[in-house]
Amino acid sequence: MITPQEISTTDVDLARRILVLARFIAPGIDLIPEGEDRLTVIAILKNVVAEVPAPGARRVSSRSRNGTSISYRDIGGAFSDDDRLSLRSLVASVPAGLPIGSFPAARPIAREWAEGEYS
Image (cartoon, rainbow, N blue to C red):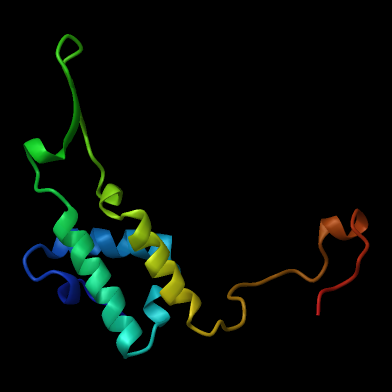
């Protein structure tokens, strides 16, 4: 499991938020075993942490004078398309296990779609 301390030693709270988003982007990121792929994931996440602007003027995405409103950039914007694709590709290289959860044997759609059970 990748820890926030491996990603950022200065702002652990930000590292936790980045890890939550990374797990949403690439589920199974914690299943990557020790080795080069795991180090690559950590390097990508370190760069994402570095891209998040500090609170203040750099995080402002838009301002309105008469409406007196300020819009801030979200942390998810620090993930570039390359970061997202890279994380997904590294997770795809991990062998998949069995599905997790309980799946009912009888489904209501079986009456509508009579193909039979999947093997």
